[in-house]
Each structure stands twice: as C-alpha cells, then as structure tokens.
Image 1 (cartoon, rainbow over the protein chains, first blue to last red):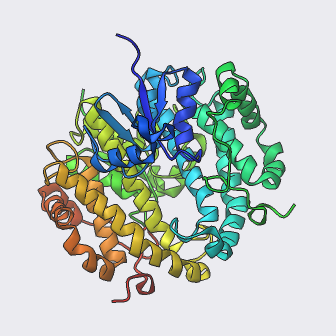
Image 2: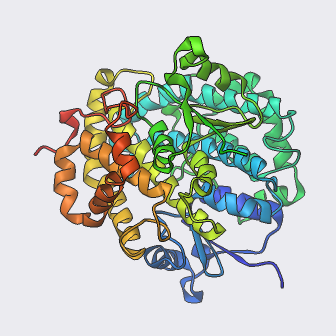
Image 3: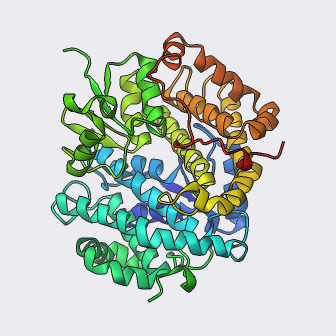
Length: 245
Length: 245
C-alpha cells in the first residue's frame, strides 16, 4: 500500500488559507494534486472545486475552500485539515495531549489570520477594499497597535516556554509552518509595523528563518508552485494601513 | 476511578464562547466547576482565571478564555475543548471520520460567532460600541443580508443531508448544542432578521426546539447557572443593527 495522494482544493490565484495546508504537504514531501490549479480539461480548475463543494462526498459539505480529499473523505476548515494531516505527515506530536496543544495554537493562528484579513475588509468580504477604506483605516490602526502585538507577544512567549525552537513538542510541526506563513504575510502587508515589533519577537523571527531554510521548504518557496503575495489574498500591502513609519 | 471534575474558566458575567462548553457539560450531566463564578475566597473569581491564563500548566498558555482544566491538562480554544470533551461526554461520534466532521462544523460555527461579534465591534474589541457605531451599521447590514443567510443556509443543508435530525452522526452532539446556542443568540440579537429568515431554515429551528426540550438542557436553561443574554456578550441586541422590519 503506497502513500495516499492528497487532493487539495483552493482558489488558484492566491495563497490565502490554502497555503497553510500546502506548506504542510510540501514540507513533508507528500504527493498531492493542487486540483484547482490544473487545467479544466484534465478535470481541474475552479469548476471542479466548486462542484465538489456543492456536492460533497462522505462527511459534511465544505462551507468554503480550502478542502482536502483523501479517497472518499472530504475535509474542510484549515485547522481541521491540518489536525488530520499532522501525525500522518510527521508534522505533529502523536500523543493526544500534544495534538491538542497543536490544535489550540493553530486555532489561535486562525484567529490572527481572520483579523489580519479584516483589516482590509472590515465591512464585508463582498465589497471592494476601496469601498470600505475608511473603516479599514480605523480597523488596521487598532489591529497594528493592539491586537497584533498581543498575538505576536503571545506566540513569542509560547515558543520561549517550549524551549525556543519549536512551538509544539520537540520537532517541526504544522504549527511552525503556519507561524512562518503568518510572519511572512504580516511582513508583506505591514512592513513598517513588523520592523518596529521585530525586537520584541526575536524567537519568532528565528523560527521563520529556521523554517525557510529547510531544504524542501526552500525549494518550494523558490518554485512556481508558491503563489506570490498580492492584493487579492489575505495579506495585502496597502501602505495606508501600515504604521506611519 | 470516578469521572473527572472539569474546571471551566470563563468570564462570569456573559455567555460568550464559554457557553458552548457549558452547554456540553450540562447536556451530559458532567460534574464541573465554573471557577470564575465562584467567590474569590474559595480560590475562584476572575483573578484565579487570569492567574492560570498567565501561568498555564502542562500544554500551552491560553490566548483567551474559555479554557478547561482536567487534572494537569489545560486546554484552550472553544472548538479544541469540545473536540476533547465530545467523545468523553458521549456528545460526538467515536470514529475519527465522524469526529473530523464534527470539528469541521464546529469551526464553521466559530466563524459565524466571530462574524456575529464583529457586527457590533467592527473596528476594535477595545473600544466601545458607541464609538464604532457607524462602522457597525455597515457591517451589520452586510452580515444580515449576505453572510448570515449564507451560514444558516449552509447548516440547514448539512442538517438536511444528514437526515434532518442531528448535524453529525445519528445522535445529539456538541455541534447540535452549539447550533442551538447560535440560533438563540442570533434570535436575541437580530429578531427581525431571524423572523424573516425563519421560513428558509425549518430544520434548524426544529433542531433548536429539540435541543431545548431535552430534560437536562431544559433544567439548565431555567436555572441561575444560565447567564442571561446582554449587551456585553457576543450576541447583543442593538435594534439599529437588525433588519429594518
């Protein structure tokens, strides 16, 4: 019996939340198909993704991408997908207590990601940024001044208490990969704010380098499989939403 | 060996996210202590909660309440706590696939709860509603017109596809209890909007009645242990944020 081939379904033009799953698959060297990025002719594309989302399979319907298909199983919600993949990819503790700690931290990362998203969409995901820019200015200021330091200070402390090298257990986990991605995204979106916060989060910044330097990750990040950051994803660089200087 | 006594830690004056955990403990008739609602003299109160939050124990620090202590284990993040409790309280499928479905749905409920919260706090949780009321009016309109129907329509469909009686598997689960709470909260906060949406979600409304009629739940809801809804919790009734009529 060989390893299963995972099928990842996510919007093809952005990193978004799908990237947190992709990083785990890439870091483990797991065989996977990025279905919505394949041509429609071969059964890929956004149409294939939406068809599965509206029809489902075993399990419940996904509310939104990303979702993962493994044989007959279809799993949605990023943290849920990672909870499933973690031990199978060697990217989570195997014992229950460790898995629960990983899940707790991953859900806190999910909260941070959602709040980062809402800095540019504080009114509605269905309206353009330009049409909610005034609200975004206020929300981004509150995020940058209060929420972001609180979240990052929290993860710095968790990392420190766990020995300083990894967020959970004694080896790289999917939580470290997600933390890497979030720091990358925040640094893209809020470069001035992150430069200012840098001195208070030395261990997190070292974790980011440690993850990026892993051979599989380094190869992935340099490849065309890594979708670039852009102003269509979760982390967007609108200079007016960043710290003043 | 008797059943463990669970210690729940949550803000004592609001239902908030802690209520999703409390409903599971109550529905199962599990022995638990609501630590922050006990007098300070007996080792309770908010001070005891904050002390544990800043110190932690085995596992990682909580980022925020609610959290649960079971012996040496301290678990945070509502969906994570419920994932742990579910099979132990007889409120989740025992097989992995069913647990993952429950977790997926619970995380989607968490997303809905967060969006409901942000209708009255679209700028910052650290500022008063009155100081972000203009932004709240816009966000609440978008929520009520687009997001809420999308979320509720989704859960109605999931319920329908699962036979119409329970959201996961063939028996009451913690997901049903959380769905009950969310519908209660939404009906408190947005009575006009929910009356209008009612005809499109008959199965969810029947689920709410089915849950409320369970003897342990009915007794709990009529007791003083049930904190009332108020304008300090997640679900707040500000008539100006509801549908016009």
